[in-house]
Image 1 (tube, rainbow, N blue to C red):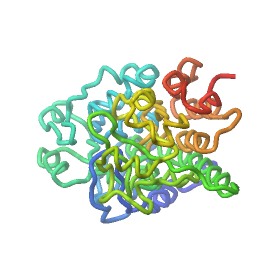
Image 2: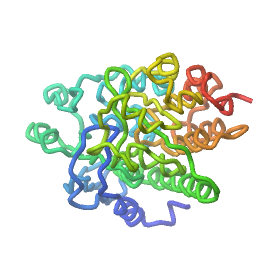
Image 3: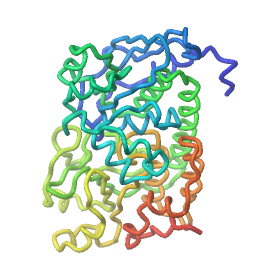
Length: 384
């Protein structure tokens, strides 16, 4: 697609207008559905252009020129901004959980400046430290749309873009579009969405062509210190079903409530999931389950189908710029291959997102090949 042949304003408005109002949990605080479809206008291609963005709570903010100082509070937004920008130069501060993912993944290797940035600007529940944020003199603050999280910032005179914690892929498209617009790089939104759409169509096509049902897959957002699993209205439930699996937490005996819901081992024993996914919000590894006698009666443990979810430029378990890679990884987990093509896809995606050539050692880190080595069929992701 040639961006020069398009009316950028029309394209960007169309990209974001398709954003879903369905609730997403799994990457932060939940918020109300947007009151209006987010939209952007202006190209941001010159300093004289005015960039207007209607965020996911329906409020319009306007910039006289592309932003250069951005503070991000929602966890996915720091790495997403870097991916859209292909740089950490315009990121001024982030939530500590975002910083931890950069430190533990390879974002800090690709963009070492990011690890030097302040990351104490909000509490664990995203309540902002307003004075710390003001001291950074940001052009804009990215925050979840909950009024109690945004109002203290706006009352302090700060410009805020509100994100809703929605669960469809359209929500990631909306975030990318808004970030690209405010950075003066609207063409990046078009490129990222086009590639994501291609991968989504590919996954859907492969899933539709299978003649057998997929395994039951249970995702743990938290494992140590109390179990929390992905219930209804989560991105995790979306991609489990996308690849052809089933989620016992949303099946015939579902967990009550939405989002990440607490549960006990007895409920997991009752479901007897065939695959267990361990997320990147705590330090749990497959060996922790394999070595615990309590879990031995569960099919996923008996068949050695417990897996640590990859951690790349950001965690793959919540929505983000690397979600298409998660779809492919999970598809191969659910329906193992003799040899997965995922390593090649990661290389291509990292060139596209970060202009970074991934090494074999980095691929092993991203895919947790050592931690997952004792799990069934994981050799499909090893280097050739």
